Each structure stands twice: as C-alpha cells, then as structure tokens.
View 1 (cartoon, rainbow, N blue to C red):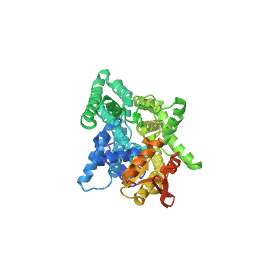
View 2 (view 1 turned 45 degrees about the vertical axis):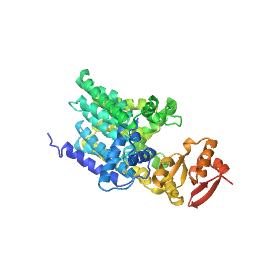
View 3 (view 1 turned 90 degrees about the vertical axis):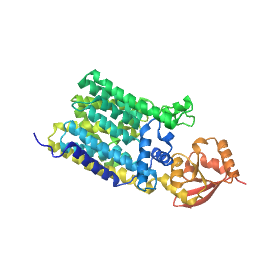
View 4 (view 1 turned 180 degrees about the vertical axis):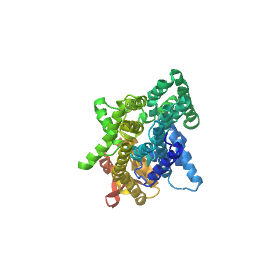
Amino acid sequence: MKKAFWSDSAQSAAVFAVVFLLNLCVRSLYFNFDGVACAIAVELGDFKHLVHGNHLGYGVLAWAFDRLWRLFGYQGHAVLTLQVLDSVLGAAGAAVFASLLRRLGRGEREAVLGAAALAVSHAWWFWSLEAQVYMLGALFMTLAAREALSDQPKPGWVGLWHALAVLGHVGHLMALPAFIYALTHKKGRREISPYLVFLSVVVCLAYVCAGLFAVKPSSILELKLWLLGSAALGVDRNFAWHGTSLLVALPHWLRMSLRVFTEFVGQTGLLWSAGVVLAVLPLLAGARAAADKSRESRFWLTWLAGYALLFLNWEPHTIVYRVTDLIALWALATLGLQSLSPRWRQAALASWTAAALAYNYAFVIKPASEFSNNRGLVEAEWTKVSSPPEAWVLVSNIGAVYVPYFAGRRTLNLRYYADEAVLRAKLDDLNKAGESVYVSGLTLQDPGLRAALERYGLKPVAETAGLSLFRVSRRK
C-alpha cells in the first residue's frame, strides 16, 4: 500500500494557508447591503439585530472576531474585520472539503486540486471576500457531510455540525433528507435519533437564549417578526414570500447553477462562450457520477434536491443561496472523473482551476476591488466631503447603510416616506428645527423623487465628474 505523502491534517492546513493567502491578495469593495448592516450592528454592539432570525450565529461570531482585533489595537471599520472573517471561513471550508474528498477515496493530489477548484469557483471565492453570513454555514455543512459520509459516522457529530450550519443560515435545514439518508443507509434507522436530538436541541437552545438575552420581544408580534427575518422586510412588516411561478423561476435557477462556477453574465463572444464551457464541464463530470447511483452520489443528489426545493421557490436569481451547492457539485465532479487515470484526473482539475482562477479574477474579483466600480460608495464618499458633518441626507436602497457608515451622516430613509405629503411634512419639521438636508444625484434617480423635491425646493450645491449634491429646503 502506497504511503501517504502527508497526513490529512497537514494537507488540510496547507490548503487553508494557501486559500487564505489567496483571499487576502485582493480586498473587495463591493460591500453588499447585509454585510455593511452587520458591520454597523457590530460597531454598535447591537445584539438585538446581530441575532437575525434567519442567521442567528454569524452576527455574534462577527462581533467576537471584531473585538479580538480591537484588543490588538485595530480602530478601523468593522466591515474589514468581517471580510477577513469570511476569508477565514472560506479557506477553512476549502480545507475541510479537501479532507472530505480524501476520506471519500480521492487521491491526495485530487483532494487538494478539488479544494482549489472549489476555492476559485465564482460564488465561493467572491463571497469569501465579502462580509456576509453564508460562508459560515458552508463551513459547517462541509464538516457535517464529512462526518456523515465517513466509514463509521457519529450521528451526534453530524447533528452538531448541521445545527451550527443552521445557525449560520436556516436554509441549511433543507439538507435534512440527505443526512437522514446517509445515516440510515449504512447504520440503520435507530442511528437517526442522536442526530435529530443534537440538531434540534442545539438550534432550539440557541434561539431561546437569543430571544431571552438579546431580542427580548415584548409581544407575540415582535417575536414573529424576529423569526420571520427576511420574509418580513417590507415597510408593513407583513409576511411576504420571495418567489414566483416555476416557469419563471426555473430558468433563473438553471442559469445560476452555471454561474456559481464562473461569472459569464455580462460577457460577449468568445469570453461568454469560455465562461459557459468552464461552468458546464464540472456539471458534465458530476452527471457521470450521478449515473452510477452509488451511496455517495445519492447523498449529494439528495443534498442538491433539498436545497432546490427551497431556492427554486425563494429568490432563484440570488447567488449567495447557491454557495453550498458547490460542495455537492464538486464532490460529484471529482467522483465522475474516477473513470480516468490519476494523471488525467489531476490534469483536468488543475487545468480547470487555473482557467477559472484567471477568468473569475479578471471578470469578478478584480472589478469588485476597484473603488470606481462601486457607484454607491463613490457617492457616499462624495457626500462626506461635500456636506456639513451635522447634515441630514435623504437615502434609498444601499445608501441607507452606505451614507451613515462611510459618510458618517444622519439619514432619512425614503423607503418610509413614499408618500409625498409625508415626506414634505418631515422635511418641514427638519427645516423648522434648523437642520440642513441634502440629497445626492444618485438618490435623485429614484422614480418620481426629483420631481417631488423640485416641487418642495431643490438647489444644487456641489458637482464634479458626474457627482452632484443638492440642498433640500422649502422655497420661499
């Protein structure tokens, strides 16, 4: 028997180090809404909002990670510490994935190359650079899968890892059928109990503690709104399902099944074709594995089906929900390559990884690192230098978090002032109190807003290179 070149733990450590360094090479300036909102709550120590009903654990971990940095003297924005945290989580997930592949019988080099392919896939790489909740759940789902597919799985550990993934995001409950299949297929039905006990107890205990010590709901309605989370984000705070008909959703879902590998959207000609081909190749290899109907392939197909049941019906166009699909898709792809010789398997994985790294870096990672490509961030910085420190600023969409966080200005969120009469009354109150109110040219692009403010009173105060700022005050 051929002796292993390095141990499982040494290999995982090496994968983690390389992927983490790769993640640190470029800093994303994309700054998604939820990540900035979490950074604001972290800096405020606002645990009521950190323990979000849909992803309970990430905010608390983010707060602890940020406080660790500050113990060593860091005084900057928390959004940077959260980005580093996600880089750690993404690298750790890739390292565990290498260990998972090795335990499933892939060769040492194939395990490392499979983890590298995962790490440079569009969805995994991009969201490892952003402050967001999804890489936390992806890490624990990989740990749960590694345990569930081991020769002698420990159901309690599967339940614990799965519970921690659910605390990363409740959507991971959709993997429940896959874990039940893995445990019952080999061990017998009696082995489900420890898994279900650990899963339910850990999740329920975490929610009870969060409710009692952080959220402290004063009514059943407040409790319901907390638990609904993203399903009750409307101004009226009523439940709203973010879905559409299957005929509309399916094309979005299928296209996203390709885009998780490479971001070809926005490209044309040969570049578009190259991106699509790169995305299709792992799926073809995975389809070969699915046809074998082995225990492992059935597990991964059940995994994918569980998530599809939810995300075909909830925002099928949103890529972050599909990050965890990459774990199953790459496991299936490496399994499908087993019909090739070791040399060809390694060459295929290495070639794909090199090509995807170059493609995704050129068209996703590098553009997201450039300040000028984030119009909202440019506008927020412009507002900071062009308005008085004590000013109020009208904001909408992502400006609701960008302006207070990056510009340090007090804001009036137009989301809550859609009625022109209500907006005018609020503006009157601020003007009577001697407060100055401003609005940027970007915000004025909202439908109907410029006309409404011109009727009230709108005066340009600063303009340069496509940027503009206006003072809002009633005409005399």
